[in-house]
Length: 369
Ligand code: HEC
Ligand code: HEC
Image 1 (cartoon, protein in one colour):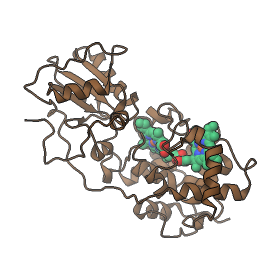
Image 2: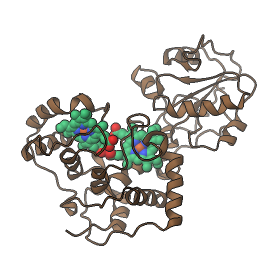
Image 3: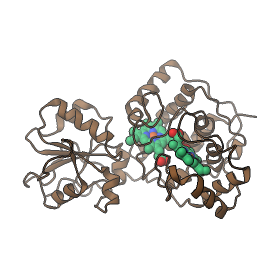
Image 4: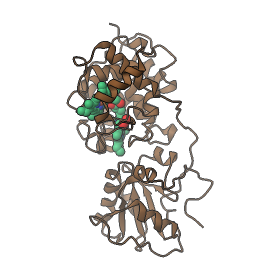
């Protein structure tokens, strides 16, 4: 079998999506140089380890998948891994890291990180018929739905929004993921994770049907590339003239509920809201007035820019709490911020409970009047 071109493939994939073009057969790029590998490993620990684990094992937070399972690497580079890092899976805790969508990494960084994941896993990228990556797998959607209900929903969720398993109805995932990638995961499972192989359990026709069912749920999706300028960290205080919020006793000494936070924001209380997710997620939607203070930001800078006058500082993330917990930990270790809290439900919980968010928009300053 000929190997796909990683170089042209990656540029092609990150540039315009694989769906419309075949990938040329060519040699894969060689392993990264030690310097590049070290740079990529540093980026991995800074940006990814929080959820995917220090050793790429996955499930450290948020059911983030393993980034070293053989079947992912075999089928996923550059098609899916690179795209997932660049654009994320909007609606899940996986944000986009590409600068074009508001993230901290360049295309070159992402390419390097993707190749590093390949090198670190030791797996070879070989998906049969890789060159036909854009082809649809034909199957009976209704039969596939029945098999899915029986075999998959326990982990992936009835509505495809995820659970232990990833969100199989995620619009970005489906838009950036070819059928053969989905099928490869179903046949082989993901080694050393809860995802079992179905290659022996289901017939080839059954697997085609489930794949066709997963595909049938895809919708239009494209990355949003118009970016807004976030307010500076120093420009943070919401309701400058308001009184302090009445949060009552914090659960576990740390958590405030969405209900209470919403009530206090409506009552125009003075506070700082920190959005601790990757900055592309702030671009998509955030709680009004929140400033980006991502979990990978420079700790000294964050700490130096926040008020030490007792103003309440509330952090939130998607996770629902891991990134926000880590930023609030910095503040608490500093010992100079007397009032800090974390939004218990995270922003996903906030949104699903019906509380409002706004899209990133620099035309309206976040700090009100
Ligand atoms: C806040 C937690 C979090 C952080 C930080 C994070 N991820 Fe993820 N990542 C997730 C979750 C959760 C998913 C699965 C989303 C879903 O349901 O599809 C995911 C999915 C992925 C996937 C798709 C894997 C697959 O099996 O399809 C890749 C690749 C990935 N992440 C790479 C990265 C890299 C590289 C970084 C660092 C630059 C990173 N992630 C940072 C939570 C995170
Ligand atoms: C016991 C739980 C469990 C069951 C049952 C299960 N899965 Fe999974 N699945 C997972 C987990 C967990 C992952 C993420 C694995 C990882 O960490 O890489 C996953 C990953 C996947 C992926 C890869 C998604 C991606 O973004 O890379 C696909 C596709 C998938 N499952 C499809 C299915 C289908 C279809 C079924 C039913 C036929 C099924 N799964 C049944 C737990 C499960």
